[in-house]
Length: 67
Image (tube, rainbow, N blue to C red; front, side, top):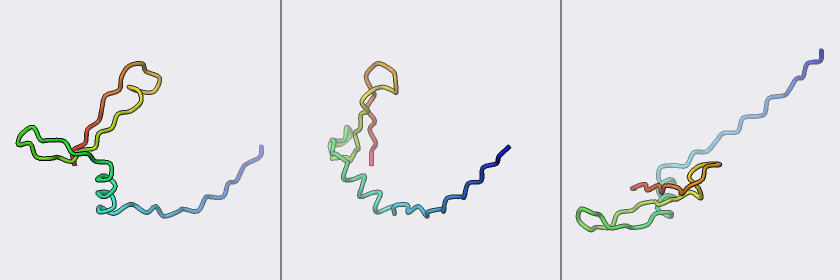
């Protein structure tokens, strides 16, 4: 029986974005909607996938993330 030896791939350090970089990226995607309490503008990210789920018929549900 032959054995296969694979060299381990070198590990690459993953650079995680800073909090400021993450916030800046989120704000680029954000839209303003009026607050239901006092009417002030609230930053939100609105995203809707193309379908409900993979290989499932039906409409998708929008995802709203308040920033």
